Length: 459
View 1 (cartoon, rainbow, N blue to C red):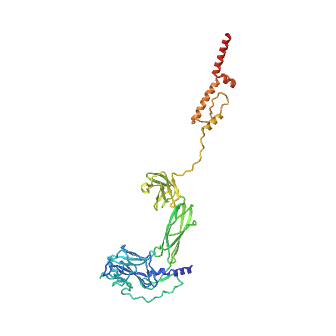
View 2: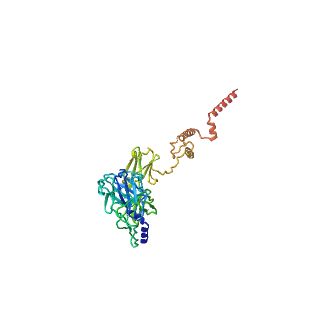
View 3: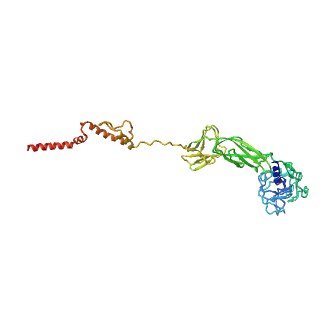
């Protein structure tokens, strides 16, 4: 592993070459021919070229802010001009134009690389007096071996009072017994050795999250000097078989339990660090208590405070994303006012996890049990016929079945009752004779025959 680290340092040696790039000369008041012809010169005091893509020069006043795009050669210069032609200073710039202007009252210029790491800084105090002043208004501030001075402009040339560097300096030989890498000082000073950085990971501590909910996990990486390392590669192992890459990721735990999440950060210059988090996963006991014209009310029935960051409320085909760091206390209700969520009025609503899965509904979903079918009128009538009286003359009414809600089933037995009562008053005869003699027409006919027979006898 030690050998691999040493080889990695040698391979990425060009990364450290940018430490030799400095702000070398500043023409903040232009030149005699054109007071607006401001320019800034960078110098590379090292022997290797440096890619300046993504580097920036920023002013404490906010103007100018320049993003660099080119390459500065070893022991070379890189010229940035506010104008476009370069004719005003007699030297073609490497990059132009840039917007904004340096103020005459003084400013601080900062040079940063593509990862945002500060490479150099020039503090121009009141009227730039601490970098030599500018009595002629058309001289430039120039870096020397020990400080700054004001002198006639020297674009793409050695500054006043600076001795030329030795021709083609050779880099020091690599030392295989150390884990540091050499780089030339910012002002031509002897080489300094940069150790492998000690990384520090800053993230949330042990935490409790809800099962089924996507939760944000964020890590910030710093080196031992407190510089933020945005170039670090960050990976997360969440303890449930899932692994993700990125300084800010989302993860969803499906089952309750305790998980050990490990965040791992590495950098190209050999930095390496681990950080562990215990994640307790619990089911979220939350429901939609009510919806009304006032808004949507949520109820936390859990014994813990719930984090609703980035959960969503849905109603009427529209959604409202709950802002980050929105919490609801245990056993409490909160109203999301209609003036805030701006959801249309509806009879139903949904509470969704950040992933879009449904956490709660309103009205709550209920499982319906099958109920017995009510007896039909035909079934009642069949039952009544089966319960016919055992003796002649008793009303055909069942005392075992309540059928008072069936109107038609109540009227039919009434007629049967009357017939049975009338039949009970007649003498007992065989059924056929009883039916013939019971007819008044038969009796009348017999009477007529009897009268006719008597009359025939007398005649």
